[in-house]
Image (cartoon, rainbow over all chains, first blue to last red; front, side):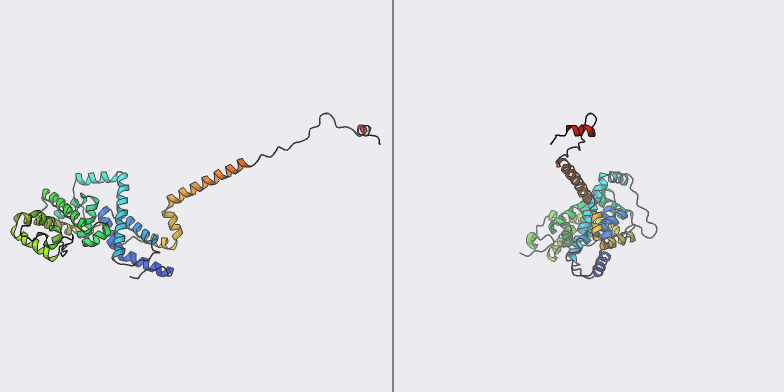
Length: 181
Length: 159
């Protein structure tokens, strides 16, 4: 991936920007879709993150861990904004109530089948706070280190470990109660 | 004192052979995700060999972790890339930065436009009030009939 600098021509800048989009879009979409549980909203949020990146594109941007952390952070903030808006509209409460009332694994066809216990685990994840969900997704789903998660979330490495420890205990207790583990 | 684990805690903090189960259980997740340094990992491993309570706690965390890892393989409905429409929108933003800025900040732009329009209207109104009023155009009114030529001559002074 090329580095974008102020002195580039418009074409080269566009190419560098598109390469950056292609490089990060899959991971960001996956992350946003996990947080939002809505693929369309995830697309909106990731598009917004790239638009914000474009607004800062005039600054020097070195692709790498710093840019990756910045994009994850902006995507997370946009996702939280989206959830707040949705919550204000009252949609979230209705949806959560429906999800809690009748737990039924979604139909994914034959291509991929999760065990019921894994479905329970995914459902238990939704019951955590947004901060806890963010850390669990980044750690377990995306496989990032505490240091990388700290850079994204703005938390210290110690806090990341502490929050994850409590989140896992909560989930383990819920899964034990549901006899999933 | 060497920093050993992901939390920055020293490796020698719990090496006196009397490690509390609480301390071990607090780092089980770190241990399982390889965030502990080698020295602390060895302490946890050693403790787990001997402590049934911590073995149970570790088994629960491990089972939860495994289920979440299984669930993470579920990519149903997760898009792999941005839709063509959204990519076009990004390219458009790149090609038209000013229009893009206006569109993205349309509330701010509308607010500024409204304030400017009101300010302009007030200025025009004020300047119209400050301008001195012009006297109305007067038309001389003559009462009676205008004097004829004979009367004019008679009234003229004799040299």
